[in-house]
Amino acid sequence: MRCHLKKIVQTLVGLFILTCLYISMRRGQETEQEPEPVDIARLIGNYSSEKCSPELQQNTLCLRASVRVLAGDIPSWQRFLTVGLSSVKRKKENYLLQTLHSIFNQSSEEELSEMVVVVLLADFDLRWVQQMLKSINELFPKRLVQGQLLVIHADEEKYPPLTGLKRNFNDAPDRVTFRSKQNVDYAFLVDFSAGLSKYYLMLEDDVSCSKGFLSSIRGHIRSKGSSPWVTLEFSKLGYIGKLYQSKELPRLAHFLFLFYQEMPCDFLLSHFRTLLTQDKVIRFRPSLFQHMGTYSSFQGTYNRLKDDDFHDNPADNPPATVYTDIGIFENHNPDEAYNQGASYFWGKTPINVGNFFLVAFQKPVILSRIVIQTGLKGTDILQSAEVELGENVVATTNGVKCTEIHNLGVLNKGYFEFQNIDQTVNRSVSCLNIRVAASQSNWVIIRNIQVWLRKRREFVKMVAME
Image (tube, rainbow, N blue to C red; front, top):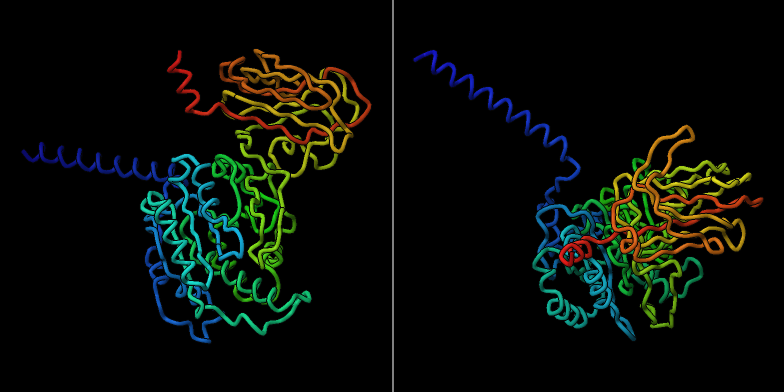
């Protein structure tokens, strides 16, 4: 009997140890994927109605105590992305509701499950705040209930002085008041958003979004790997499409609040980036956000700014390794042509028949569209080349090679575009190759290679039809 009991105990102990080891291994594998809980205790402070004392005017604790949640439920777990925007009453048209429609309509349900949009209604006209709150409740009830939309507000008495401020840059007093208040608005918004997600994206309240912008942002973050960064930019206009890591938000909020009267927010943000040792702007193309407002929020002046790098349906550009046997000039490496940044690949002569520029995808993909742009301002165009897809990538003495080739066509004046590829090559491919078809004496710039994947819903539809 004792022997039997001893065996049972040993078996149970063994199972317990194996279970612990399994759980430990799973946690190690899923560390990056498991969402962190939101620190609700920290956000409870945002419901406080206490006034900030003069001693706290320069402290982010004052910011946290100044914001009230007007609508929406704070999510219980940390999302991937918070989209923050501040809105005030405009003298002419108001674009906030259109912007919200664009954010939600251009995102899939899967993307929205990883996103929370925070809207700061930053005007001191409480009647306008109530009107906007009513419209948001009527138009976006599902997003509010699901924790995908939060509406917040800070009362006028919570703001520092907004008149009698320094007239830096020779701005008129009303302009100084406007830009100083805007800095404080952003400080409230940014500080509130800290902890809601891993990353934070600032938008203005008069923009339209590209399709699947969250997935594009995720891909660009991955492309940076372990390289340090403070700000990634997805638009070249104003304070639109600027991305931060949420761990930096309390410091950014304090910075904006501390220097609120010194200069406009875009100036402060540039200083914030450089102070944290990111000297150069890191901007991705195409832009994911477009300015759509016609009249500015300051005095309703006419404002027709447009971002000519914006694309409504940006490329997917899945993870890949890029190879070439063309000589590389300085730091214009092959991956610059594929990573959708502002730089490009620059190749030196000799450029001979058979030279290649090859994109090897990390995983086989089914493509729907390809765009290739070469040259810059009419010079260094790749004059003659064939574009090929290969089902496999093999190692050679010269590097790598595409095999089982499907020829798509040739460049036309340095440009190539092919749509509905999956109707011609309806299978997975592992590489895209640009093969030089004629020698040239000029150097070559390959500045943009864009590929679009066949979307899952399109694939399901095609399978159903088959």
